Image (cartoon, rainbow, N blue to C red; front, top):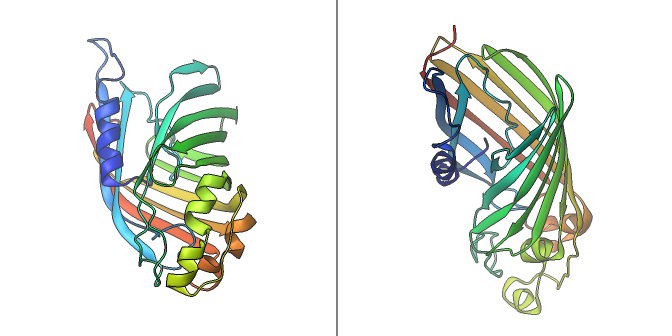
Length: 260
């Protein structure tokens, strides 16, 4: 979740043929859409509105897999007991030349490709690691470590909460937090060179409540505090904020043999 509409469409395209279900095992598909707010760009004190899209599949009477609100799009290709790994991809919106309020180097819309690993240490605690690389745009490496406590009653309701830590490479930090000599001339900010390392720490929480056999409502909130070199960038200290907030709400609809 925490997905743009474009990301949701891509996920639907990727996952639509899966899983290969037996003819006598009906599948269920859950889709949803709603508004969300996220930082306009990393380090911004403004937020942007965008659609949040959900697409999930479940086999027969099985419950839908848990998804954290901020995890990237992906699907497991290898499972062994409580452990699974697979590819992951995400998108990072562009930062326009004047979006920070002064003229800075533009950062293009970025496609991030990578992978993830999940581990259920107990039935209701999941650990997750992600690493992705921006193949265009910021052209940097970004990784997250997260943990979620998950309480649920099947698909009737679900609550999750847990910490997040994010790391970023030089390319990512430089793209969003550097002030080049050219930027200093056009923006009036001092020159600044950000290195990679610890990027942020925070937490996310989500809640899903089933309304009837088909409809559910979902919402999430997330907070991150910028750390490392990013927090001291003039782009953040003079124009933005170290505190990064996200949140959204959506309606879900389930197709197929709905569970009671």
